[in-house]
Length: 212
Image (cartoon, rainbow, N blue to C red; front, side, top):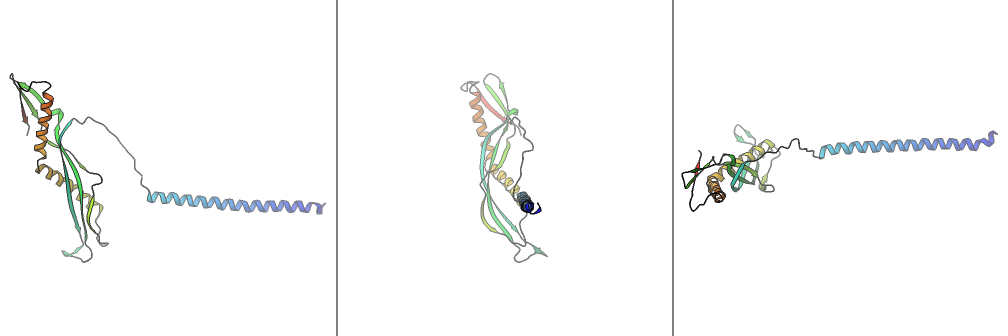
């Protein structure tokens, strides 16, 4: 009987050995998948960007934009390390680049009032003209010169400060070149067209008065 059962016992032991080996391979395969998955997740955290909208609000603008100016501002960022006010060689970083801005000017529409005076005169009281928006044009960034030293790199804070100065200069230059004057002229044209539906302009005189 023992001799007859020997092949069966060998078969059983072989099955157990094979199952044991397969179990090891499965265990190692699962372990490799877990490790690779962990590395992939870790790598994703390093190279991916995550952003979300935290709040969206809507409100009536109540603004009348009557003139826009397209301005190109060039900036020169020159940074270096100094010792006793003397520039250290090979520490100079210099960038020359430009951005385009659109500056819009106009009025607070809710503060514009219209009053009929006498028989043939209408006085339109206008609020102070102001800048309504100052926006950077997407895709307008141009680099003319780029030379950065590994010993003195331009920081993100310096870049942000330079961008704010460019926006302020663009607004200042637009105003100096007639942004406000053009905004007033266009506002009068628009409002005259609107009032022509209410008054006969061959009979009525429209006068605009601006608050200071």
